[in-house]
Structure formats: structure tokens, C-alpha cells
Length: 144
Image (cartoon, rainbow, N blue to C red; front, side, top):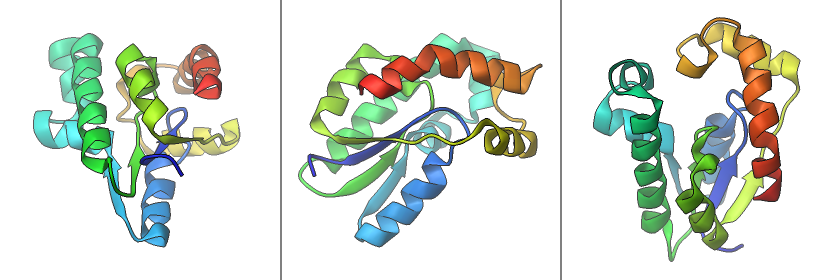
């Protein structure tokens, strides 16, 4: 393994849940970058509403850098938000990590999204928006 283990993939595929289980199995720390942003700045929905997506992405990139830096030299599992991989700095940092790309079927994602409506980028037609975001981000996930 190279560096921390970083889980990437679209929203609602289970990165946080699987990351926690993997960290427990490996006996190491688990970090969720969305949780880091929320702890420092408030809910993601509030950040999107008050400051916009661009501000959230900047906060997210700093949280990813912080988590990867803290994990260097040891073993840790880090779960990234679905759009975190779009940042070029984050992409460079992932070169120092073992990256795991998680996928799941759209039916499972639809059930999870229906249970958690607090995703600002999925407002309105949640599955339609999810499919559009996934189609845009999938090549980046696969490349990383």
C-alpha cells in the first residue's frame, strides 16, 4: 500500500460506511472529509446556501489536504466527497495515496438518496442530477 487509503466515487455509494469498516478492519484512523468540513464550517447545505459551491469546494480541498497530510507516514482511511476529485490539487495529492474507486448500482443509490435529501447538488430531480454528475465525474474517478 502507498500512503493513506482514499475512497473515491459518486455520492451515495457508501464511501463513509465502507471507509469506517475498512479502518476498523485495518485497525487505523478513519477520516471523512465531508465531516471535517461540517465540523469546521457548518452543514454542507448551509455552506452551499450562504456561500455557494465554489466556497464549499475550496473548504473541501483544504480538508482533503489536511487529512492526507495527517495520514502521511501511517495508515489511515480517508473518504472523499463525490466532487472532491475535481480539484487539480486534490488529484495531485492522491498520487501519494492508495486510491479505491467505489461504485454501486443506480437502484441502490436511488434508495439512499431518497433517505437523505440534504444533498444540495441533487435538489429537484435527484436521480437525474446524480446521473449527470456521475457521467461528468466518472472519467476522473476511473483515471485516479
